[in-house]
Length: 432
Image (cartoon, rainbow, N blue to C red; front, side, top):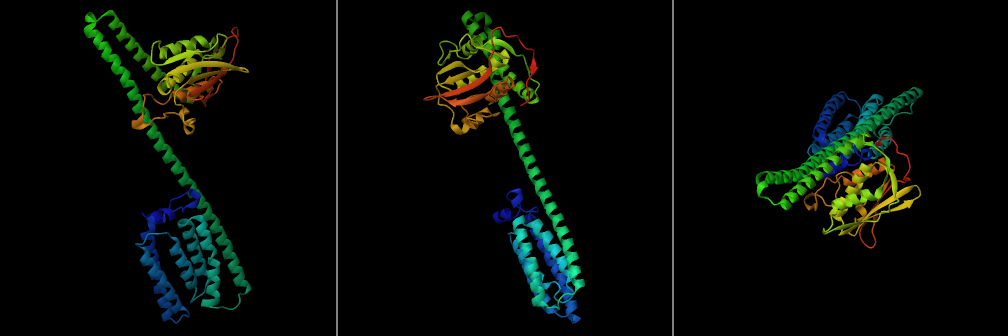
């Protein structure tokens, strides 16, 4: 299929393309066109032998259509030239040697159907608008006739009504075909994207699970085989690694399990009033242990009480701090400030920040700033996606702000509460 075929056939938007792909049916259509003209030539030859006036002109015009059909059997392109030839030559041919009504109506119906099915709507309308002009030229030039009587006028009026009805039916059919094609394209695109996401998900989960499992198995086997020969400090170090990898596995599983529950609105939240400062210190010390290359500072006051699910808030803090550890600089600060009846919590780092065009994309599922072979860190690309859904489920919002002069600021809000505020029962997360 050539570029011109694609442009004039099925390519383009639903409203700017033809319902039927002319490029796919061109050889058969032109062969059928040539066959029809051969049959008409035979009938015209019989009329000429019988002495019917105008048959000679009709044969010449039909011969031109036959030549065009034979040439276009193998020539790529649009259906417009063929239909234009049919309109010009065929319109002058129809009825040249006999009564016009039946043949002219059949010809217009054929041209109407072919134009609406094989051409974009705008081109079809222009082509069909020229049909009355050609019919008039045929009547006044090829075979002039006396002025029509009242019966002829009524006959043509009735035929016009039928032609309008046929046009409306065809336009409705074309619209339905376009709509079905658009729905099919959308379904195919969604299916393709779903398959890609599934493959990406399986690949990333397999990688994320395999690495800690390998470490756990390796260090556990080492402890089993060399327990008696290891120093106490070495045993403690190995156990710390095993516990850390097990905790990483638990976090990955928590993230994976949270997705369908959030989507279905079945993730139960247990909102309670609690102090945010201890949770912030606990997660910061877990991900940024003292003496490491990176450090985290907690500037959350002891008066910060929020009403939310403590476990989910810790999951949010863990995801944001883990994100800062991967992509931020060497220093992270957790702060909070009061905004009316909300506490705005900020996780800021001094890293390179996020480009402006990616500041919304990072909150989508399976999205990382580094993709494919250029990925600089492990992860499912789910942390910020799950974080946003959890914050929304607890009645807050989350957004990104650029740091000054450098860095990133991930901010989220939670409902403010007082220390003695009563606890509420568990509620399901709202499906977002």
